[in-house]
Length: 343
Length: 286
Image (cartoon, rainbow over all chains, first blue to last red; front, side, top):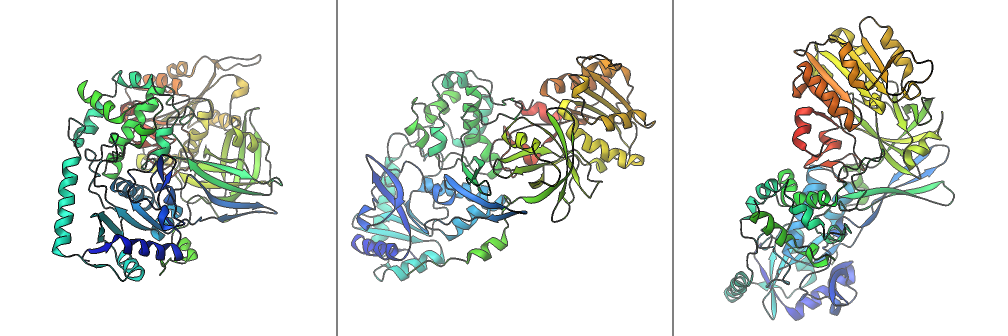
């Protein structure tokens, strides 16, 4: 499907059409930061956002969701629950798309988690390129996610007064066709303009790791017994903020909530954090990752090694969200650099 | 313009949610100790299916949640299955308040289990400490139900005190059988105890095994596992034939929630049964 071009004014009208008929989410300002939230008015949409606090992951794998409801009568009746969420996700950056690829692999491909799979299948994903690094925290170039388009139905590149629109799926094409009559085929000038943006983009991103990321699993393995994990963990509060903002974290907890009559209840799933003290604690009181350094190391190993071994891609997309929110100012990049230097 | 969605019911029909439990009725119970109670469960909609010994189920007490519990009976007993539950958390405490006729939720069986049929003709040495008796019993029952398929069966059982011994009817039966060599010990004897006293490793002196054919199944608290594996290795049993079952926190049984993960291994899927050869490489295993 050949790329199209949509003037920014026409894009606005296109979004207005989308909003009128579908729940649409996209980047909006929240105090000094940005979050993905429902777009009520097109002017709330901030396509110039550098990075959102959390990724659109929350629309496929919500922070809290009900898995089933039950009623205890003469026997127990159990009903599966499938909560639906917004159907168009606008403005996901390449790091978010790379993370979505991984979550798809975890929840849809190898496993069949119908709640995730169903929401994912319904959601239209419209990606948006970042033309420059969002801030000093990101290292997406190193992690190989800067040029990713995974799962996008449409993908937009900002060419100043217009968007260059790549079409990846028939569904994406249909939305574009039905939502606007102004999307024209890209001309040679548009292709040149996009190439110029690409070249400018390539110049503005810089590698931040001194080694190719393909060596990261081995570098991590050699650091397993290093005191570095103790040293970094001295600063860590085990607060789990890194997990909460990570676009690829998918560990969860499951618990029941029951009505006052004790007859009706819900089973809920919510995000969990491997950094919390009780995460690996069993009933008998044994805690298999009791030390903070063990939990910290486990997180780094998941991101840089285990997930790669299980799913074929890095568990870290280099978005830097964990570092950005870390109250102890622990830096993934610096930690990777440190373990690489200390082998 | 709007986005077309598949009808919700159709989507649901294609993949049933793995989080939906089946309803099981408790048909018998036995209070082993103040902390441990045995439940026999029959599923409302049929049998548990083709599960292996040393697998587990996720048990729901509606209103409190789920807990992973080892199946302590053998798949050869098809009409029902048994769970030996220690009251230790909110779900298991609530389970202790349940009795015959009460309903619980069951998901599973989960886990790799132990495929005993792959080891026909082998001798078996079982070493079970404390609540380790529960998973061990599923395999002991299996081996004894298919007695002619297997060689010598040696069973070593340890508990803190005589009152803490679980499955006492089974122990009495195994001790009386001529085709089973079963020894029981307690750490702290009470008045009237005439059996062995001492930790479980002291029982190894009482038995003879052939390391060339023996599968050593060692299940108990982590500290017991280390010492018992040492004894089995000292007999000459290879690392690949020392089997253990690992206990971990589990919220899904599907290899997703992360709680049971040891390095890159999800115990709920790749375990809970591992060889010592595998466990020692995991580093964080025991």
